[in-house]
Structure formats: structure tokens, C-alpha cells
Amino acid sequence: MFNSLQDKLDKALHNISGRGKISEINVAETVKEIRRALVDADVNYKVAKDLTKRVQDKALGQNVLTSLSPGQLMTKIVHDELVDLMGGTQEGIDLSGKPSVILIAGLQGSGKTTFSGKLANFLKQKKNKKPLLVACDVYRPAAIEQLKILGEQVGIPVYTEEGAVNPSSIAENAVKFAKANGHDVVIVDTAGRLAIDEAMMNEIKSVHYFIKPNETLFVVDSMTGQDAVNTAKAFNDALNFDGVVLTKLDGDTRGGAALTIRSVVEKPIKFISTGEKMEALDVFYPERMADRILGMGDVVSLVERAQEQFDEEEAKKLHKKIAKNEFGFDDFLKQINQIKKMGNMKDLMGMIPGVGKAIKDVDIQDDAFKHIEAMIHSMTPEERRRPSIINTQRKGRIAKGAGRKIEDLNALMKQFDQMGKMMKMMQGPQGKQMMEMMSKGMPKVPGMGGGNLFGK
Image 1: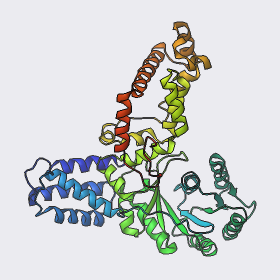
Image 2: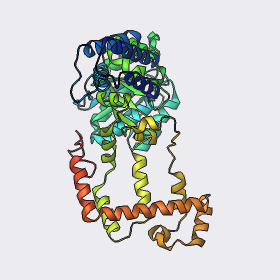
Image 3: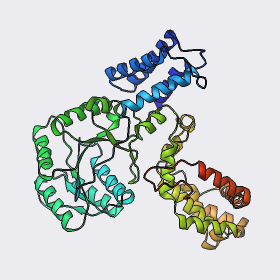
Image 4: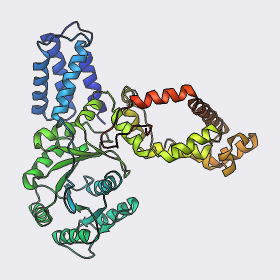
């Protein structure tokens, strides 16, 4: 996500780094390169021109602060302008209804149905809601079946009416069903449509009129660039939606839609979707996105994801096992599964400052742990519990069972042993002191109970 834009902005800002002071000439050169980078990323030309004009006006005439170089000052100005361009602050969704009704709209193939499932899972897991999914795509039977499958995956019921052809009636009945059965959120998935299709637009207007949603979210495929922005504008003129959802941000997107859509449509981006997993949904924070675009990482989001997977009871059990030298491969497997639940591996690594740029050309698969898991699953329960009993003969059987070489198993055993020693060391006085220092220094994350990565 944003790799090309990040590279070009980095080069543009590098031009002014090391200069003794801000001057009209070096600012003009830098601004020209920034504008070119934005336009290449499919940002609307007028938006790019206005942004760079503001950057230039702010940069000229400013004295470099004692602690800042010209490059750092320009980076801060660009960062602040990007944040403003994307909305300034994060905006949530309205869940005040009884039940709250959320209408999902968008083009065919934009990812509405998948997003509906992700949103239901998000509200269930993070907001302690009891959602109901509603299948209102009466034109594509596969969409109804897809929503049922997604609902089953995340343990959320799906309201359908076999043979019904009136989406407004289905949606109305679903809201009544939700009230009668204790559902506090109703998520209505509608048929994909084209903004120029008058009949389909009138249909979704009718659904909107009858159910009076708290939120109408417009889902756009970020891969379509400026087309996504133009479509959003046409939909907004007809429907006056409340917010935008950008999907497929894990693809080869240039990022223009994310940067432009707020200023053109004047509606906030509320969620971004980065993958097929039901957990791959993030609240949109303009400042965090600006950090990532400029290669600064996104540590806060990374900490949030880690906190979501943190289980205090499991952590206590793990500490006891480490203290007794009983840490085994089953425990190692649990740690791997927790990491996998945090999301796309390359996306996670890109949140670490400085790492995103280093791995931009590296192909990191989501199944990067599959060979390790295969070797662990090839062990007997006793071998996983007591790795010390794994001798040469057992290694041969384990490697063969996993379809790997003995060298691969030896490397895993060595890494496991080193990790065990490190974890044992962390149990000592110095380790505890280090953990306490890290814990106190970990940023508190809003909405996560005021805790931090270590659960303190």
C-alpha cells in the first residue's frame, strides 16, 4: 500500500535534506516533486496543486528550528497537510439507534458483502454488540449464499427471505426481527449498482427511506483510483451517505482515492479493509495513514492489534511454564497463531518504522509459518511437550512427515532453543526490570481499556 508514493515523496523530501536553510529555490524544487508524486499516485490534479501550494506557503519564510533540519521541517509540513487532506481526525460510526441500522452501498465487485461480514465481526468483537446481517441483494443468489457463509464464520446470524424480490420490504422486516430478537445492530447488504443506473439508484433510495439508517456507508475499491472518487461523488449526490469504506488497500494501489476522496466528496473515510480475513478491517485514522505514507510506520495500530490478541490468563500460564523449563512446541504454536490473527504479515511489518521501505520488494506470504507448523504437527504430543527427547532418529521421522529436510528441523530446534533461553532470561530480575520499563513506555491506546501491550 502506497509503496510507489512513499518512494517518490521520500526522494522529493530528500532533495531538501542537508540544506542549511529553507529557500525559495529548494522549496520550489521540492514542492514540484511532491506534486508530481501525488499526481502519479492518481491524486486529483487540483487537490495535489492546492496541497503543494499550502506546503510552499508554510515552508517559505520559516526559519529552521534549532532541533529541525530543513528536511525534517518540510516533512512535518507535508505530514500535517496530508492529515488535513484526509480529514484531520478519526470519525466513528453512529451506534445510537435501538437497533442501530447501517446501510451498505456501492458498485458491483467493490467488496460490500465481505465488508458487511467484517463490520459485523468488528462490532461483535470490539464493541460488544449483537449484530444481525441482512441479505438484500435479490439479483445475485451467490451474494446471499456468500453472506450466509461469512455470517457462519464469525458466528453472526443472517436474515434472508427466500423468494422475496423487494429489498425495502426485506430490510424493514429485518429491523422488526432484530427488535424482537435482541439484536442491537442491523447491517443491510445491498445489491451492487452503477450510479448511472436510475432504477437501481431509486431502489436503494427506497431502502434508505423505509429503514432510515443511522449510517449509510459507501464501499469503494481503492484499486480503481480516481474512478472511485468520481463514483463516490455521483453516489453521494443521489444518496447523501455518511462515510466511505476503502477496500483492497493491500493490493497494488497507488493510494490516490484515499488521499482525494475526503476533499472531493466531503465525507469522512471511516474504515479501510486490507485482505480477505474477517479480522482485516481497520478504523481509518488520518494521522496514522500520513505516518505510513511518509514511511514513519504505524506503531499505535500495531500495538492495538497485539493488545487484541493478548490473553492475560494464557500469559500467566506461559510465565509459569517458562520458569519451570516446561515451554514446549504446543506453546510455541499458540504464539504463532496469535501473530497470525493480527493480520497480513507484510502489512504488520510495514507498521514498524523504517521496515516498510526495506521490505517493499520482498514477497512475504501470509502462510510464512506453514513449514514451521507442519514440522510441529508432525511431532508426537510427547515430543511437542518435551522437545529434549527429540533425537536423530525422531528428527528423521518428523522431517519426513512434514515434507522438509532435517536441516530445516535443526534450524527450527535451534531457534526454539534460543527463544527459550531468552524467555528464561526475561524471567530474571534484569528481564523483569526491562519489561517494566517497556511497559511504562508503551503508548496507551484509546478504546483499549487504557492498557498496553503487556496487559498492565
